[in-house]
Image (cartoon, rainbow, N blue to C red; front, side, top):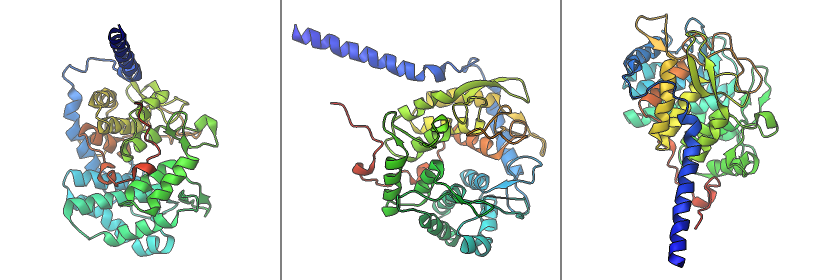
Length: 392
């Protein structure tokens, strides 16, 4: 009798477990709006998409963030460097890194880091944002590994020195300086990116984890908070995807918790309905870059089924480019709306192909996680505050 009862309990638990797993994935799997087993012409677009990324490089070596904008982002150029390394286009990657290496004296040695934005010729540089500098350090780490080179060690060492100097007594990192000289606050997204960018595991990393545990961890939902002082925007979508891609043994549930941002919008340029993730719980826009990041994160979490579901939606968001023939890209967002918080997106975010969204799409399509290079940091088990205790 007791054995029979135990057997039924085990079966019941198994069924409940299966139902819970199905519920976790129900929202995401329900997003498909057409047959994913049918021949998908978007697969042929990957070459056109890669060609467009390559076409956005200027004579300065810098990558323009979107067509005909004369706007350059350090973050976008870091992503493009990693993209070119993955494509083994070393000369194109070096053209970007050479530009920033040549700014070593004027920017890194003088200010600590590189400016966040500038024109395609490198002028009108402004704002020192820690997160983008961390991304360029990640790009340099990829270059060093791919080509066994020390060419950019001076630049990488300078960036690492600045990132370490931003650490406060509580373990958090100051975000940098705005164009007006005002100090930027401690931003979760940038802090975890810097954790990944600085190689190894030492007191710098240990103190970051201490800060995150004490100041950014939601122990009820087992999530990192983006803005704990503002309940409406306490959570941000990219913190889910990035933390899952950065921290080893992070629960897959972190990615399912991002269902709170799922919504459907009409593409301004094509009228096609797209399902995906917003920046926050306003859910007034599909953030295509962020949705591609989630696809990368699902691949990284060994859930290619869910990554493919997102890629179906991303394939539908591809638009024709105008600056080069037979090229395509993904806009930053599907429609006019707000970014993280209440601020409106820029006026072409939903109409022009964007470098960041397009490159993350390629990463997802090719099952590549740019943050995996430094994921194995040999973090002591006692420091992994995000690891849930096992239930015996």
